[in-house]
Length: 364
Ligand SMILES: Nc1nc2c(c(=O)[nH]1)N[C@H]1C(S)=C(S)[C@@H](COP(=O)(O)O)O[C@H]1N2
Ligand SMILES: [Mo]
Image 1 (tube, helix red, strand yellow):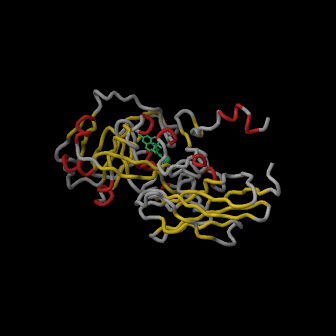
Image 2 (cartoon, rainbow, N blue to C red):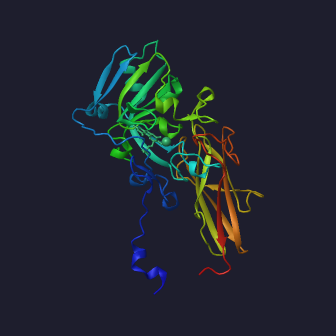
Image 3 (cartoon, helix red, strand yellow):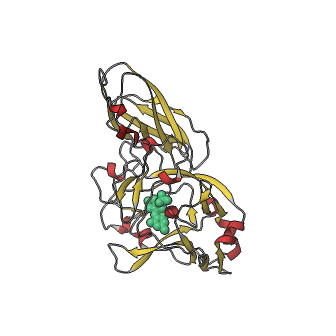
């Protein structure tokens, strides 16, 4: 009997999420084993700060309050009757690749899989805002999620809440989504309603959204002012810069780190994405960065706000250990750095992705 014939091998033909933390649930997408441009809902990463909320759809409403001329609320049925848009959006957690940061930082030790691509369907945010009419006194919109709990650094109960500036272009791109890949948004991804902020890191895309508040002063909630800021020294909030748009980033998905592959022809594969621009070029190095080769961009769709597949045909004639690198460029002139600026909370790690592989003389 060979290894391939073992009955247990048959049980492993379906990829699953990779757990990082169970309570609250934080799971990474198995990107080395997903070959579709759209991440299937059941393999989309989950990132939660608090216990899952209880949602009762009969009594659930989205309410708009604070600095609005006409505070108003909508039921799920009403939202579904409104004009809708579809948009493909790649969402990356700002902590993605934190586990690869040097020197290490505390927090979820994400490898490469806290990122996914989905089709989101819902009501344009501006359609809702127009009905409630933002007052001139307002400076920000605060989006409140239904999930609440105790943070380790506070003793009062808090909801997950995030704000957005009143930037016309930004707001015009946002969606209040009730569908993910043509299904009602799965509970773990924000059922019944989730904010989508194309081009921004994951924390902006508030799940289980229940309230929108227009405020006349900048919002300072813990998920805005303590988390999701770039700081170099722990506690140095005076020099904090907010985490907002995604930086240009890319990964190798095949081969995976540490893999042994045979001599001859191979197609190296991976993904590249960026915030507001589009990917213009992806380069691969097989010699630890001494020389670079242009990869082919092979996405089925070239849309803003989404990732692209890349591939590169490699003919290996010499056995050995290889250090493979990938770096992406976007049309706004962003390039991936060799090492992203280190920060105490480990956000925005878009350092060039490196993996080591082995090509033995004979592969057993
Ligand atoms: N209500 C709520 N929304 C949330 C979060 C959360 O904990 N609660 N996590 C945010 C973060 S940090 C990320 S990366 C994304 C993850 O979305 P997903 O779990 O659907 O992948 O949701 C964002 N929205
Ligand atoms: Mo995140």
